Image 1: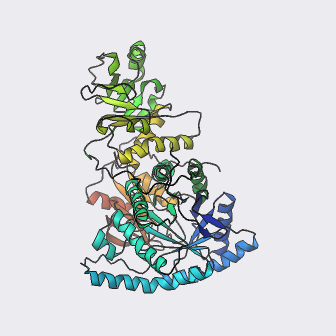
Image 2: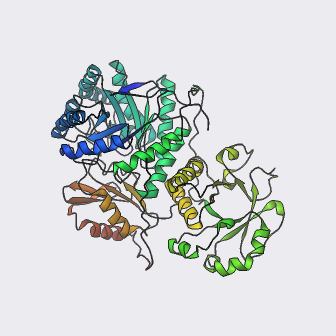
Length: 593
């Protein structure tokens, strides 16, 4: 791990300093109705006791913004000085009121001064300048108030909720996200206000990483050094939500980017804090500055037709055939480090793993250095070299590496032939192994068109589930339904955890289909940017359904909405009937602080 990092200035958030040499701060967000002062106060206290550094509370209306004053006073009575952040969308007036009571205000530059209309318009430079002046007129009062009161600001851009102006000039791209934030940052700088930070969140891990890298590059070009808040938005729940966050946030922390983080899960916010702390503790602060000439990794155009192979270590096979059959996850390649290991136990293998041998595409990986080919049930063989071996460029064999670092040291190697493996310790906790595998393999698949990956040391079912989950999180190989689910907050119009679980039970067999489950219109059509179908809270007890970004049915009673969603998927030709023994693969994973 390199100690070089993008060193930022320090800003003040309540009693805490953020950025510079300060530890990485862990944040979360309340899920209660802000108007329910007692429930919100209780949840903030619980977050503080769980080790949360900063708590965010939504303020969707004027009344909610005013309730923040009562919540702050109640917390003070209870001896809690946890810094509070007001989350603002659409209402500058709510931000002005909230600034009286909270330590930081978060605005979304896509909707603070704009209403997204989906209008297609070519802006001349003059018209674009007039739009920027309109934004400045609306934003200046808030900046002046924050400056006068010593409050902080987060300029928090989200992929999919960019203004029409940005969309028409830059598109829904990393460039558009950064430009959207810089419009507001430039106004802050014009008023000599520097107590602010940036965030660039997306549910697509690859888009999120690329955007934050671009943010750092642009800051370096301009000589800026504002702190950075990291997060993968709408990551979902269970193991999948954690994998996405570990890959997205962990990749950037490993590159020296990030001063504060939030792991967004469609679960209780109390589950977010220990997961975030585990990730933050993995990356102690190094102070060597990132040189101005340092280049972050270039974007790699991946060959979408090349599906990475999932390898399974023959040495990890145990008496788990039933579990593998139940999970329906099978390897593409069975890795044998020593042919004698296979030949010595061939009969045992045949008797115990007959169902695996019926997987007709299964290949056996044989080390090239042994110069042998094994004829085994007419099975295809895959030749491989170990990465440290002095490779002489023979044929189309794979090259096996035990780390991304060793892969990067390889000379003249086509990444399409590289297989990276992670060796995990079964004695570690489940969440620790998920973190280790995500960091060791996920980063590699974000940046490199690799031929495959392998997780060693775990039971086969765990190894395969985790491996396929990492490939799905990096969008390299879709093996199951993809859920894009917001983490819930006071704006949510239905119980997100229960609804997500119910929809997952109905749809978990739809391989490759991307479903967005959003609690309100703020996190609705825009932020589910690349989902195939959307299930969005439209009003209390009512749901709107989307095909991509188009709303096709409105105001469906909540009890009827899941069935209507299935009908919609069927009418668009994406439905397949589940097999009789298909099981819901949803999971929940907790880690204590």
